[in-house]
Length: 210
Image 1 (tube, helix red, strand yellow):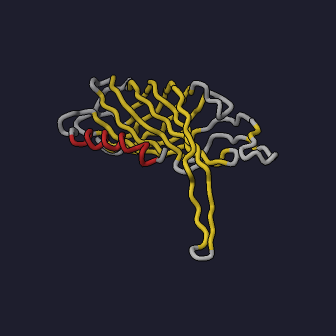
Image 2: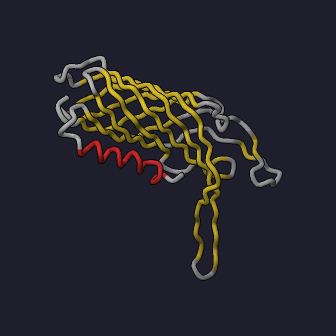
Image 3: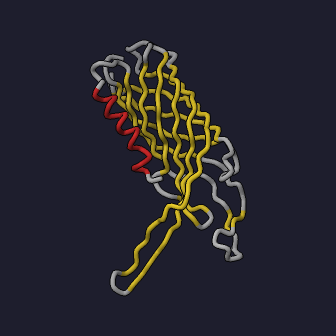
């Protein structure tokens, strides 16, 4: 699954949400960066049947985040987001790219519009996708060498998501939100644990009057 295919549905939702900005107070969009981590399963896989098995890696790397939420009351709202690894990582001779999707309920314990520091909690359900690719390099005397990755297959897992963060409003609309996400990914056998924490920060914009 390419990143472009991953974020197109959310990008369309963001554009639609932006067109409603003046009609719907409490709509926010945000983009961020962080990292998700999980231990290795420590499995040795002979991917190419060469007699030299390769050990599976830890989950890591730099992840991007894109999402939106809408507060239908001062304290409660709904939201959706996707998190994806920017580049493919190495996995026992192949490369991989994880992507997380989740749909959440949003709770903000502080409702005052004059507050510039607002805690935020989210919880919901979603899916985790793990896509695998085969790296190839080909060379000839006319065009030189070129590299490409061929998509092989993907694995999808149900996940439960929760997060805690704090919005720091630089203006009445622009905010920065450091946050911690925790995911429980069912049967996350590609790695050594079903629990996947993520640490990062996002920059966002709240439309209308908050």
